[in-house]
Length: 381
Image (cartoon, rainbow, N blue to C red; front, side):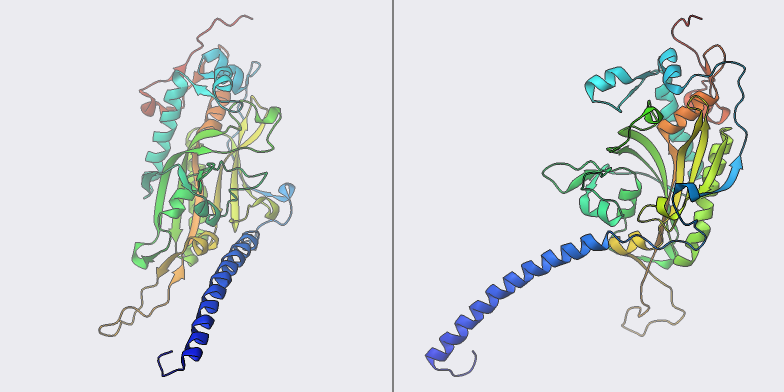
């Protein structure tokens, strides 16, 4: 086009240029569609698993540790729903009218108990070098996907906001994971340890039955979450640190629980290895999950674009930046306190024959010195 051309030849090249532009637009649209399809297929591929993880379904999971002994009672125990009614600290009926099933009002001492549990958990974890956070509770769908969760579909646990690309979070793991998205962290800054408070929202699709009644499985709840970003060679040791923190927290409240090394079919897509904690709930007559700790290796960091640059012993050449290649960090998450499950454990394990509930000593200073919750109604024999 820049050379000397006959008018007819020039016009021919102009038309060819127009056709190329039109074809390019079509090809770019095809590329976007194919990239999206590839991303959807790639999201179906889970993380690798630790060689020591039991292979199989939930029944194949192995017990790592049993802590404490089940509470013994000389009277007929109540579940947390009946205790909450007698103590006048829950209202499920009004919440069902206002919001629907699997919602609840906390009242009176239950409000103090929730706030006490949150402050206790955050302060205890901070003692171990974690930075406290309060996170956004609405995030972009793309961040949810990059963390390994499915925001769409019939069985999704995620609430999506119609007409937007945003979702309500099901765990603080998602917004905390997104803090360092598309960034390169100096190696000297690792590990990064966070303890985050948030409300969590879950559809609980498919959940039903007596085992899910009351506070056990709800659509909205408060939770304190631990999250670590570290070098790859450190993630296994930090995983052990997280489960030890959980065990220390729950032991300090006098709970009887077991920690479980979850089998391959019960890991979830992001987890390389996952330890669950199940506590004894005497009113329900069974163990119930109160916590988990997962090592997600680089599954989330690859999707979120979180890297670090190893420190080189060789200084860069003058006028040039570091030539050391970057690596993906490893991410880990663990529950310090899922409030409704903890309330179930405390009410059912610390109930007294007269219907009152004793507050464990470590929580009392976070509840204004309250030592016992007493019934608000006359209980007839």
